[in-house]
Image (cartoon, rainbow, N blue to C red; front, side):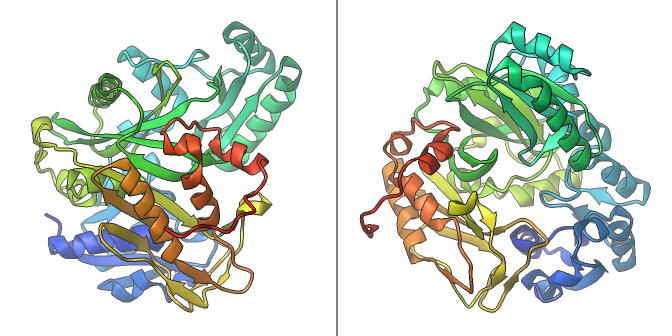
Length: 459
C-alpha cells in the first residue's frame, strides 16, 4: 500500500478521500487554490500545497502544478476524485512519466473511453446494445440530418468529448437540426477543445440506470449492482438510489452482467460506472463509461457494505480484487440527494455566499458528506455542490421517508442563499417517483407544474 497520497481535488470528495487514507494508514497531502485556503481538507491533511489562484484552469486543472506538488511532498500516488483531472488521460500519463501512480484506469483505457464515440464503437463490438444512431462522429450538418432521418426524431446531438451533462442538445424537428448542430459543435469546442459530435435517437421517458464496477489489473471484476439516476436537471443528477427501482430482477441482472462484460473487454481497472438508458419495455442502451469514482457512490456503499475508495487504493497498489461476485451481498435501499447552492426557481442558477447557519441532519442510517460549516464562503468559482445526504433503509418506502425527514432537519442559511432542498422534497412527494415509474423528464415536469401552495408537511 502507498505511504503518502496526493489528493488532487477539493470540497466533499477531497474529504472523502482523506478520511479513507487515514483509515488505511496513508499520509495525505492536498492541493488547494487561493479560494480554498481555509477549507476543511486543508486543515485536516498532513500537508497542503497551494497550486494557484481561484480559477480552476490555473489551479485544479493545472496538471503541471499538481504533479510538481506531488513530487514536492514525496507522494507515491495521486487520487483525482471526480471532475477536474479525474478523466484526463494526458494527466494520467504525465503522472506515470513522473513515477506517480494515478488512482484510476491506465491512460490508454481512459483515452478511448473518454471519447464517447470510440467508447460506443468499442462497446458495440463487445456486444452492448446502443441507442439507434451514428457510432462515429458526424462531420457535417447534412450527415447529421441524414442520421436523424434514418433513426427518427427526436434525436440528441452529443459532444464526442463531452461529460458532466455538457455538450448535448435535443432536437425535435428537422428544421431545428442545422442550428442545433452548429450550436452544439461550438459549445463542445469551447468546453472540451474538441468540436466533434455524434447523433443518436433521443429516448423519451427513459430511465437513467448505471452499474458500479470494480476491476483489477489481473483480469478480475465484479459489479456492485445498479443505481437509478433519472432525476436530473440539465443532464446533471439530483437524486440517486440503489438498486434501481421498479425493474424486474432479470433486467437488473442483465444490465449488470452486460456492463461488467463490456468493461473487462476493454481492460478497465479501478472503480468505474457503465451508464445506460432504459425504456418503458425495459430495453437498455449503452450511454458511456465513467472512469472515476462517482458523486453518488455512497448509495452503493450503503447497500453492499463495500468502501469504494478503499478498493480504489487496493487496486491502484496492484492488489488482486478482494471480492468475488458471489461475495457481494445487496441489502436494503440507499437513496442520496445532492444539496446544491442553487435557486430552482431561476433555472437552478448558483447562489454563492457565506453560510451563516449550517446544521446537517443526523439520525439512524443517515450519512452526510459535506465540506460546509458555519462561516464557510461558498464561492462562485466551482461546482455548486455543498453536501450529499444519503440514507439507508430495509425498503424503499422507509428510505424515502427517512431522506425526507433528514432534509427537513437540514438548516442552511446565508444572505441570498438558496438550495435545492425544497425542490428535492417536491421530487420525493411526486406520485410517479414514489412508485419508481419516473423518467429523466421528471424535473422538467415539476418545473412546469404549479408550485404546491399547501404547507410542507413534516415527516
